[in-house]
Length: 380
Image (cartoon, rainbow, N blue to C red; front, side):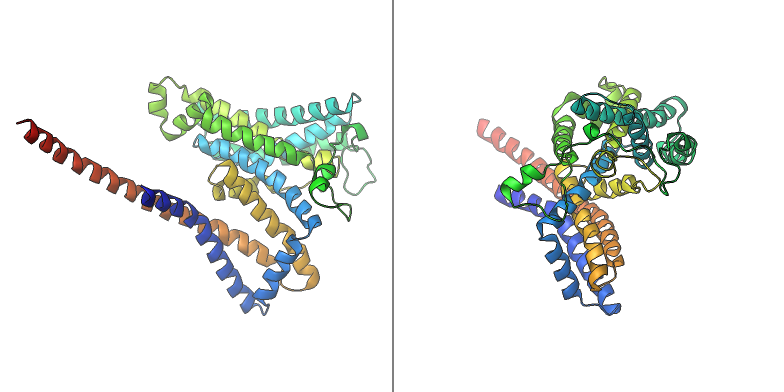
């Protein structure tokens, strides 16, 4: 009984371990060819990450990456490739930042309304793609790509001039949110277990929301009726329809949920960092979420680890450049290698697991006639 258990555990850990080892080997070769010491590079990366202030940076960076991964994973669970998370969160962030400048209510209410506005805009924008798929059969990859360009190059480009607060500002963005509309940081909570956080680092309050989101995602997908219908429709829509699950409605629900979660991606920037939307607004998080979801296998714990890993590599880039230990591009190489190797390794491990299941099923089937014959012989 224990051997199959340990084998399954080993197979589960094999893919990420293989990806990490292969990434280190490839990166070490690249560092050696570029004339840098791989030992000094990895030592510098680990030394930087071990500092409390760097840990805060990693958590701040991992927060939107994890949220983006969850947004993408909801679509993956339904066998939908929501590549429009990028446009959804950018449009939602712009709308929420602009909307927030008109709020003058009680602080927590302001923050709640800004978050709800962002989720509503992201959900509606993603829902358009779902509606096109179920009514006109438009592939969600094509529609979401087009909607990305419409959101960033169309709607925002047209409305941003009206929302600009200071035309003389080089970044030209919305007005800065009022103090009451800024999310409190979590430094006080973190300092209970550590020390005083220096250098002006602040752990965004969205980190707590990301944790709640991860727990909620895990429960809904694995423990709720909606999650079962979502997974069933994604695996086999025909069987799901026969079981009473409406696949077209599930597509709409999945895209709405994915877009709503995508609306949260830019909230750390709006509520905790810049407190406005401008032309320098952070981009690329939606596409990074695809990598997080793939590496984390659409599971909340897996995506949390993937987000932390990518955040660690991102925050290591600047110190490497400052110290001259290695080129910061080595971080990009490591990220790409980990992702590519993980996808291949997961597929190999999955085939090995399927072969084991077939073998165990065959052995169990072979034992049935023998048991039946023995029973018949005893009875005679």
